[in-house]
Image 1 (cartoon, helix red, strand yellow):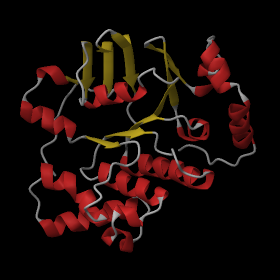
Image 2 (cartoon, one colour; image 1 turned 90 degrees about the vertical axis):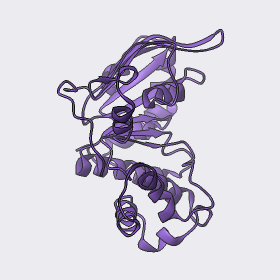
Image 3 (cartoon, one colour; image 1 turned 30 degrees about the vertical axis):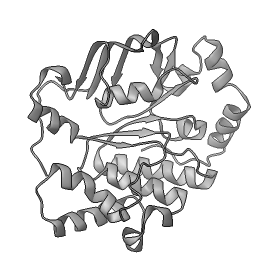
Length: 272
């Protein structure tokens, strides 16, 4: 749609955060935090309440500035590029906020068209066609395009918000608690949708989640926020061995054992 920001040094890691510090007054949320996200992976971010998972996502997205450290996206430091290149960088990222954050006064199709109106110069008829295509990719029927968000179920609202996140054909997709509020069947279906989109569109996905089934089903690696840093980022079997009380409680408790049992029975399709 718009000019892409071309770089030669993005390499294997489209996101590189180094030495990040986030604080609100005297409350330090992150201190000397490092994180690299591999191209094409689904990375899950977990941590206890108050560890700043959403703060980290907003910092990576550029919705807030860290007090210290550097964040490079696609090989470029967002603090040291032109306004035009910064906008091009932002257009390569899509985000599904917790709760969807759809505009209640707009139809579903109009919600998906919002990023196109703001960041492209294509005509309205093509916007409508593209919006309908994104809704189809997200698993919604053509009829849903004309509805208001309030007419949709919780699962359909998630899919509509996902379609909007995909409006500008992003390479990076950020998901904030994407299965929160969904029943187990709906959550499992949404997980499989993310996997299919990752394969079809070549996405790199960064997902904040408390959903253990999602972690076990679709995440290639998991990053654990502990003590103001990313304590470990690795495959789930290795993360589960990390010697920390929170990791032990979270990944070896009854709910984690149930998720592991489900995967062992073959109920969850393989990643691909």
